Length: 216
Image (cartoon, rainbow, N blue to C red):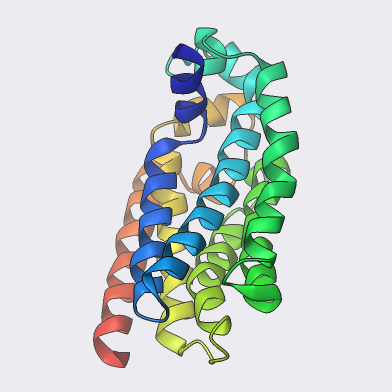
């Protein structure tokens, strides 16, 4: 049971649940409840890939800072187990999304968002373009559901997703920003500092809300 709990924690469980829930709720407006559940399942698999690859790549840094909230550092799971899980989940996420209700077009758009998340883990988190994968991924998720229905995603949907995605990036970094700076992780929030990152997140959220009010 401890390994299952460790895998759950390594998936970044909170964000995974939030993103999966958003996809489920949004899908209900565009398709049947059966298809909505299948879409949410595919989305969840993609989120597992992003979360698990993040913890696997960050292992050395997490160990250096003794982040005991991370299951790999706790020892509840091993890197070998997490690697094996990724080898299974990566192809399964492609199959579930490309062959499921999203179809090839919607599935490819969503998997592009997942690729952005993985690219952040391995590359973008270290440079000033760190918000870019979040903007693209959060725009891709709702857009993929609409595209799967042979419709064009409205501006408020993809632009709002991008704004809220970048805001989520700034907020997500705050808890480790001081340790990240020590480790030389130079994403945009780390370069801007705690205060400016909080302000930026607040501004982006405000803009996103205004956009929704104006365009909805």
